[in-house]
Length: 114
Length: 326
Image 1 (cartoon, rainbow over the protein chains, first blue to last red):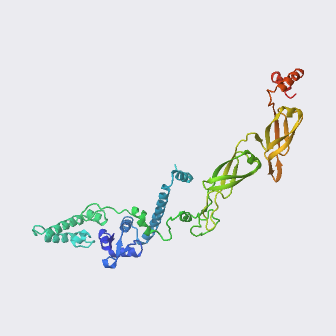
Image 2: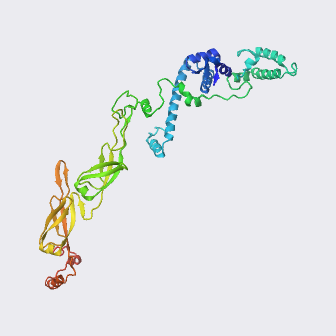
Image 3: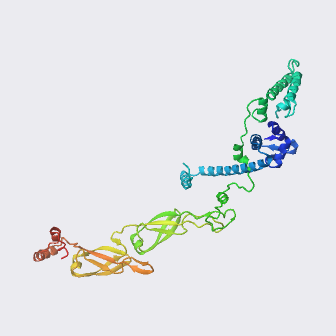
C-alpha cells in the first residue's frame, strides 16, 4: 500500500492533478488514509496496477478520457463476470466426480466447434 | 521510503529538454564529484545517483522506456503490474460495476440469466430465495411383497431410511416388476418461496415372492390340490385354500389326477375401467395314494387289476393323444 506521492513518482507519465481527476471519475478508488499521516489516499496493489493499465491504454491505444470511462466500464464488467465464473468453478471443483460428470454431460455442445 | 525519480535527482521537470538535462547533470556532477569531495561518502552516493539519473535521461530511448514505466531509476527492467490477477482476485471487487452481484447462492446466478421463474410458477422479479425453484428429485426403491398381498392388495411397509417408513398401498393384482409412483414422497424441492417447491416422487419397483402352491396367470390363480384315492374315486367335499381365504369345494365322484375344477370368481378381483372384474381359481387334482403299503388295498387291487386291465402309458408309444384321457 502506497501513498499518492509515491504513486505519482512511480509512473513518469502521471501527475498528481491527473490522478485526482481519475479518482473523481472513480476510475481509481483508493482507500481513505488517515489525515494525521499526511496521506489522504492509500493505493493498494490493485489500484497501482489499474493506474498502469490506464496509462498503457492512453499511451499505446490513444484512449481519450471519454472512451476511457467506457473501456473501464466494460473491463469492470468482464472482470466481474470472470470473478463470478471463478467462484462457480471453485464450487464445481469441490463437487464429487459424479456431480461434475453430470454437469459436463448437461453442458450443451458448442455449435460449429471442431 | 520513496525513491527519487531521475528527474528529481537532476532537479529538472519531467518535460525537460535534453539540453536542460545535460546542464543540470554537469552542475550536479561538479558539485558532488568524489575528487572534489574527498572523504565525504554522502557526496559520493549523490554523485552515483546523479550519474545513474543522467544515464537514463541522456539516452532518449532509455528515457522513453523509463517514462513508459518499463525500467526503473537504476535502469533495471521494472516488474509490470498486470491488472488481470488483481482484477480477478478479491481486491478487484471494489471495481465491480454497480448492480452486479456476487454469486452468493445459485439464486443470484439464475437471476442473472433470467432463469428465476423457470419452474417457480412464473413469478417475475421474485425476491431473493424465491426466484429459483426446482422440484425435488425422484427416489427409487425396491419392495418385495408376498404372493397373496400382490393378488388381493393391501398395505406394505417400506423402509425409506433406517428411521423413516412409508406404508405403501398395494393395488390388487399388481404384476411383478410393476413400478408404483408415490407422489411427493421423493427428495425435497429446492427454493420456491414460503410454500416451497414440490418434493419429488418415490418410485417403487415391486417384486412378488413366489408362493409354495399358488401360481398366477393373469387374473387367474392356479393350484394343484392333492386328493386321496378315496376322495378321487368316491367324491368328497374338501377345504381348498384361495387367496381370499379357505372355501369348500366338491370333488366329483370319479375324479383323477389332472382333473381341473374351477372356482368361479376366486381369482384376482380388481377394478378395470371402472368395473369390478375377477379372475377364477383353477384347481388341478393330484391323486395321492398315501397308503401304498396297505395290505388290504394291495389285496383288493390284485383282484381288481386282473379284471380291469388298463395302460395309462398307451398314448405315449402310439403317438396318439388317445388313451390317457380314458
